[in-house]
Length: 292
Image 1 (cartoon, one colour):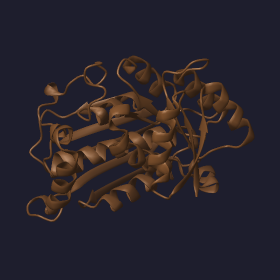
Image 2: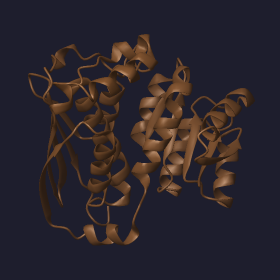
Image 3: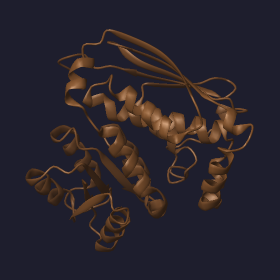
Image 4: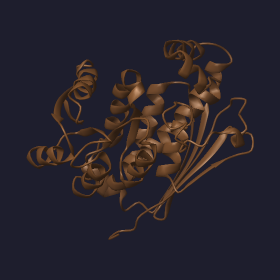
């Protein structure tokens, strides 16, 4: 069973977040009331993941993310963001946080986000050592509309990456594939999720079984070498106009589901390029060299 550390100065919010995680039966939960208390706990035991609020006394979530990233680099951090903390959240993602969940969406998104990040952070030490010496690898996949296979593909790609880069690249790739699957091939708009989350989930599972949606594939070209990691993800949907994408870093948009994936992709990757028809995105990450 994985162990999750929840950090929040509000007792009510701590219990709420911890209760949502314990409800799944998959994780045990420890608690800290601020960043310094969290670091004291990290000195005694190393959790599998930290969930932290951003706005706290003594040591806020931004400083906590920075300390964990430098001192406990294998422990991923998921942020809980509130209205007014949008710019800090973006900075925390740049400093090493793996993902974020708006406080208004905790009940809907916290458990699934933690699960995805934990899956992405799983490591195999000897595989990492082996693939560190890989000179070049190219592959092409045609993924069916199956979420389990999409998740397995992300895990497969992680095997070729070092631990420092693996998590952030996996999160960005997972967001690109999820967008291609849900918004591209199934043609579901994020605005529907804002209106009715249960209807959004019901309709996505229904379309996975219906023609033409069930016959559509996600095409992924992958190129990994010592200098960079590059993915080209293309879906068979009708596409969209990339120029209409809202700025996800705008405080008015950051707590909305619409644009969350784009924010994570742009934060974690060096380049994110959409084609003109909006059904293909290229993700590029420059790789750190040994000793950096």
